[in-house]
Image (cartoon, rainbow, N blue to C red):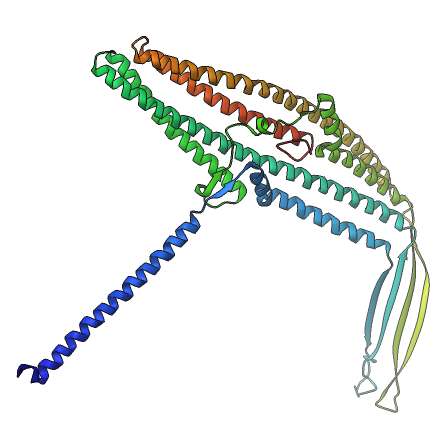
Length: 474
């Protein structure tokens, strides 16, 4: 009991107790902080790793939104629309203002200079002029026509760029979808080969097959493993390209929404006849329509040059205010008088002789019109040729998909039969490997045929000048 009455020991005990309490509090704080940090990290990781589901239609729309070419064409369209408005306002009267002030020095020969006799005198005037072109409105109308044609061309370019960007997005998606299907085929193949490898080990150990058969199975397993790795790499590349097109920063966040079948097989759209397709292309293809507008532009430019032979006549009315100071030698104060007047009339200028400059310009513009007509003809031929090629490609791909489905089904049945016979010792391992490879090739060919069919259908619509659609022609 005496020891507890020692103040020094009591103080030391008190410090120990408080030190332990402090450690416990710090431990709880650190634990709570770590838990909060881990929770925040988990939330951040979940947010960053959230998957983005993308189907082919989303891919087309998102690629449009990210397309720099589309943004540039829209900016060009806005620019020409402003130019068109500016040209149209050239038909309105123009109000201008001018002013000047002049200082006149006194006699420079004077022996003495005294203010105000020798002070500089000044005069000033201000003029407001309203000018209205009369004969000059004719070239302005032609310039306005030029701007209208340019605006129409840029609208066609915007439509064309929308179609091209949508087709590009669809192509990237289909590439990724094909790569995903190829990986699925490779994974299914490796599972089948693993089973064959396991069966071969049992058969080899029991003496049912020779060593060369067993080695062929092992070789096939090694090759199939490499094919899986290649398929994974191709899928990563395809997803990365798709992510760049649609504006997704991490391609691992992309989850493809697709079907084993092609969109064509699911939607079964109706194809127009070849003649109807040609008519649609001539009516809607932007390249053909732009070529026609280029002819109109060249013709208007030619007409605008003929306006140079006309005089320029403008009506004007102006108001002028003159302030003319007058000095008095008997006073140091300046007196001034003011004149106001209105003038109006006509202004005319006419270039009567230019040594044949305008005539040569006319000849040059005539040749440009002829050149644009040839270009339009060539553009039509190219587009119609593309329509025929794409039409034939669709027909061929429809047949290819049908044949590929039959081939894949046949290869699968054949593999099942060969696998059964291999287990019974009726065929060699080479036959099993060959059958497995045939099945893998048939499945890959079917996936490729479906990819080709969807892409051909979308490309065909773009050639017609229509926005790509999975179901029907827009």
